[in-house]
Structures are given as C-alpha cells and as structure tokens.
Image (cartoon, rainbow, N blue to C red; front, side):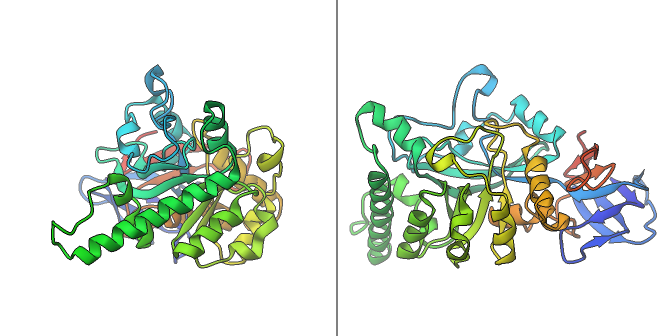
Length: 379
C-alpha cells in the first residue's frame, strides 16, 4: 500500500493532467487528491519532479505464445484457414520471459491474440504482465486476418486461400454461417430437439454478431475497405489491426462499425504491396475524426519499445503529446474493452502505474523508474 506524492499525473481520464497525490490500497486506486497523508501500513513514494502515467496497454500482441520457453509457436495453428474454435488462453505461457521484458517497457496489460496465419484464428484475451490474477478478460475479441499472411501460408499447400478473392469469400461465408446458426438457436427457444448441432467455432462468432466483442482483423491498405464492407453487411464492430495505408481511407474509416484502428508495428522493412506505405499521419487524422486510435507491438514480432517509438513519431508529425499517450493507455483500453479497469488513473481502477523521469511521449531521454501492477512494485 502506497501514497504517491508530488508527481505530475497524466490521468488519461476526465481529470486530465493534475498535480495531486494518489493512494494505492488493496490493488486499486483508492484516492486522488492534494496533500494525502499516509495511513497505517502505507509507504510514501516521493515523486517530486517525476511524471506518473497509467500502465501501458498493448492493443495487439502475441506475448507469451511464440517461442514459449523455446518450444515454438503456440498461437498460430497453421493447419486450417478457419479455426474460430480456438482460444488464445490455452496458448499463452504466463511464465514466459517476454512478460518481464514487457514490464521493462511499461507494458502492464496486453490484448493477446492468435497469429494471423488463419482467416479466422480464434478468440483473444486481455492479460496483465504481472500479478496474481492476470487475466483481465477472456474472450475479448475474435481474431481475423486478411492479405498476405493467409495467402502465404496456404497457397504453398495448393489450397485456399490463394487470393484475396478467396479470403473475402471465406470471411463472408463464416459470418453467414454464424448468423444462420444463431438464428436457429434463437428459433429453437431452448427446445433441445430443435437446436442445431453444437459448433464451438460458430459459438465463438455469436458475440461478434451481437456486438458484444469486436472482430479484430489483421489488415493493411489493400483490404481495409473489404473489412469495412463485411462490417456493414453483418452490422458488426471491427478493429483494423496494423492499418498501414489507412491514410487512403480516412473519411471511410470514420464509420460507426469501426471500434478502433490499431496502428503498427513499424520496426519492420517495408515490402511491396500491402506493407508498402508508412503513414503515421493517419493516426493524427483519424484521431481528429473521432476514431479511437491505438498502437501495438505485435510482440514478439517487434521490439517491446515500439509503443513509445510509434507515439513519438506521431508527436514528431504534429500530434498533441497527450493524445499520443492515449494511444497506448486510455484509447487502447477502450478498444479492447477493459477501460473499466485499466488505461487511466481514476479512483476504483486497478493500481497499474508508471513513474517516469519525464513525459515519455516527448522526452527521448525519459527513464521508466518504477512499474506498479495491482498496487505492487514489480520494477
């Protein structure tokens, strides 16, 4: 239990940027106010001259699921292009050293999803990098993919999908089958004899059609409009993940079906076609249009420090630093549906706190000095 005193606090919530104290108790943010005094059992952290932010939220990651303790991939089932029945929960190693590395970069929460080899890869979850009860949300999203990843995996097997035509058709066919399955279940009204045969893969799609979770789709510029077309046709919520080239469709993406754009990572060489356009300005322009924008590491595909690098590049191109910080705190938490617990410093939320030597969105020499998860110092 701690009282953090004298810091400049970027709450990323309604209170904005404040200079007040924060009381952490029982893993939660218990109180925010001026001149808080330590109570019995509480320790004071003097943060004078320091900057405090929420723990970072990585909106798209494969943390703990690739090269798990040297055992290979556990989040990419490259045997069938449609595997909606899978669940990332069973492919993540919570003891992976990758979580320690994430904490060193301030990443306290990650949306961990199956890889993008498959058109429908399965359910993703939101998980913390440390703590005793680390799963924040099971079945947080349903992962989909477009473009070169499914093509590159299955074309060499001489099976579909070999083209973007096939990928679009297979997404549409899956969503259509989920809709029919859901309608049959509803029409049966609990009558077991009228119920369709149980199908876990179709069950995982029902929350998408009910808009309870988003269809989280790996997509670059070639396929963004296809994903949006599917979202409109089935009236579902989507996130477009990676989104390089989004500047080609700024007005189109400001659509009610787009729950968020998750940009990056950008620490990879550009390649012809869908990976050929690097446009940080898209984050700025989409944010201006009211679209929630976040950044990602795609860990372990890229270095963990990519979150800071990407928001820094957005600031370099003219984004307000606090709006840039939102892309890896409040915006990211809202996009993956965990803002009620993380992503901002507000009373009642999880005590996931970072203490910096300076404002990390603008100071290239800002040092992450302390990481707190669930009220415990973990770095």
